[in-house]
Length: 179
Image (cartoon, rainbow, N blue to C red; front, side, top):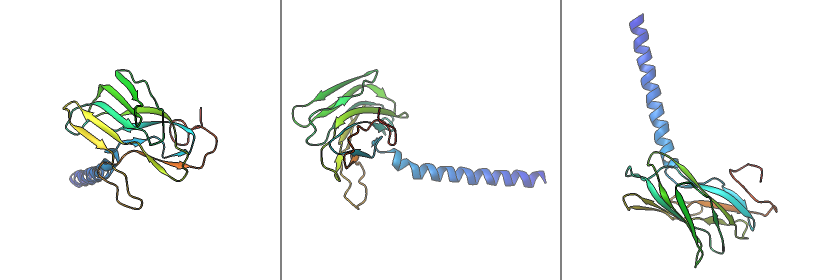
C-alpha cells in the first residue's frame, strides 16, 4: 500500500509540475512586454500612470536607460522620481522622457511613472513608444503599433485608449479613485 501511495504521490507531483510549467509558458509572453498601469484614460484630461518594465534585459543584464516618447500633440510630461535614476524631459520636438541609472536587474520589475495631458481625441489609442537600453549596450525597441483586429507584434508600444472626457483626472492603477 505504501508503495502504491508513493507512486500516486510521484504521479501527482509530475502532473502538477507539468501544469505549472505550462502556466509559466503561457504567461511568459504577457510578462515580456512593457505595459501601462491603465488601459483607458479620458481624452483631453491628465493621466498619471506607470509603465511596468517586467524585467531587465533578456541577456541576463540589467536595464540602465528607458526612453519614452509621449503621443503627438502632448507638449509636456512629468516623470516620477525614482531613487538611483535621473529623469529628464526633452521637449524640443516630440516630448521624450528618459530615465538613466539603476540598473534594473534582469530578474526584477520596476514601474516608471508619468503624468501627462492626453490628446483630445476620444476613441483613439495613443502609443508611448519606449526604448529599453541594457548594460551591454543592446537596445530593445517597444515601438510597434498593434493593428486593429490584427496580431500583436513582437515588440508592441505601450498603448492607452482614449475615452470620452469625464472631467476627472485618472491616477494610478485602473479602477482607483482619483486623488
